[in-house]
Length: 161
Image (cartoon, rainbow, N blue to C red; front, side):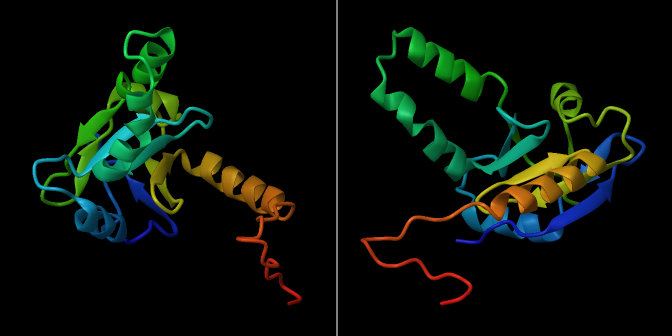
């Protein structure tokens, strides 16, 4: 399975369309199932950006709903948070999409002539470019304090190992 790598900045055209980076489209196409949209766009729960999910990954994200009582408040809240603001999107032949106004507002892109597409592994994010730059800088700084637990009691391999 491919992952989304790198940060790419593209311009909105006069009609409000923007091209998904070619490498990201390639990853999306390898994961697309016939009959599904190429991707699902949704606002991030915690960040001022738009998340772009391959449809199969979005389906895995929503699986926990099946374990909740479908008539419970918890189910209703999670379903609304996941589905109500999710938009299935297929790019045109040139790989361009139009972001729904709600998502452009969430990411601070209403006045921006460009957007930054930031690969974060299984998904990618769409940011206002200055906010993306700040997010990457903050993430690099905080990641220096992250230690990943060992698997099955094995010692983690560090830089000095």
